[in-house]
Length: 262
Ligand SMILES: Cc1cc2nc3c(=O)[nH]c(=O)nc-3n(C[C@H](O)[C@H](O)[C@H](O)COP(=O)(O)OP(=O)(O)OC[C@H]3O[C@@H](n4cnc5c(N)ncnc54)[C@H](O)[C@@H]3O)c2cc1C
Image 1: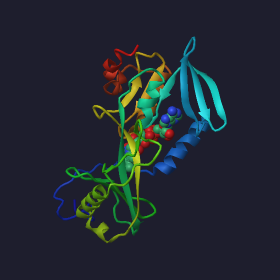
Image 2: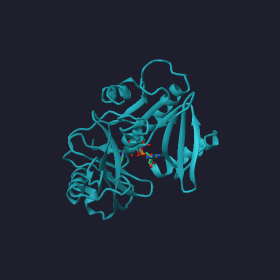
Image 3: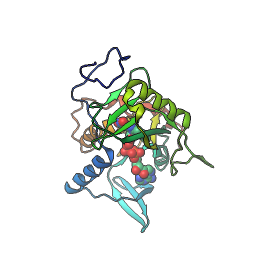
Image 4: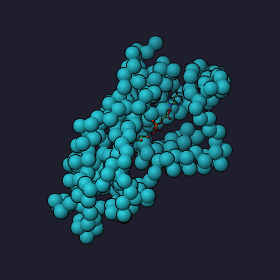
């Protein structure tokens, strides 16, 4: 461990190392993926909401809402990739899709000389650390932030708020694991909302009860999203090899929740 990752605390007695593990900046990658999709013929409508859905003869009559008003679109198939809002978008199809919101926290240190050359995760404590190209060290690992409330549930339109205790514990885990970060200033902490399912596995695949409807929500979506997209796109295009790679994540495992939905 000391030879491969000398920045780790001498208290770390053993580690596993995956040579092709990596990390990427979602703010760069997400825009790049969208640009490539558009180059390949996709039409992207940002700031546009799936507002309503009806059945048409061969698929769905979808209502999209944006600042410019409402628009009807016909679709043979619909994929709900609406993250923590999937429980709400499922309602448009008269479905319970059991996806729940949870708030998480990330923190960035000031820039420093190259120190951490790997994506570091701790097996016994909640911690993930990586150093960006700019030199900032990013610290996270699944520490909670607090969701804001609305009259009818959690308010997904407002950011979760920082939980100081969780933030302190996250930073302590970071400094215990990589003592060099203890001397760095924190420049920013922020929160985001993730989607959890009842069994913590992602919800990815066809919804048999509503032919033509597919879901992709939950799980470590930044890491696994491209794989889900590749497999699901093939399935939606009827190219599925039938090897069942997504079977474990099928939304049909929760079909019993919809048994009484008239
Ligand atoms: C602090 C933090 C750290 C994380 N770290 C990691 C990590 O290290 N590795 C990892 O793999 N994952 C990580 N995640 C999880 C990862 O960010 C998510 O799993 C991923 O973003 C999910 O992508 P998604 O496209 O499924 O959903 P989202 O990114 O939540 O996107 C859903 C989209 O649907 C839109 N939407 C909602 N309702 C509607 C509607 N009615 N009509 C149209 N659009 C709608 C929303 O506006 C949103 O843009 C982290 C998350 C957080 C918050």
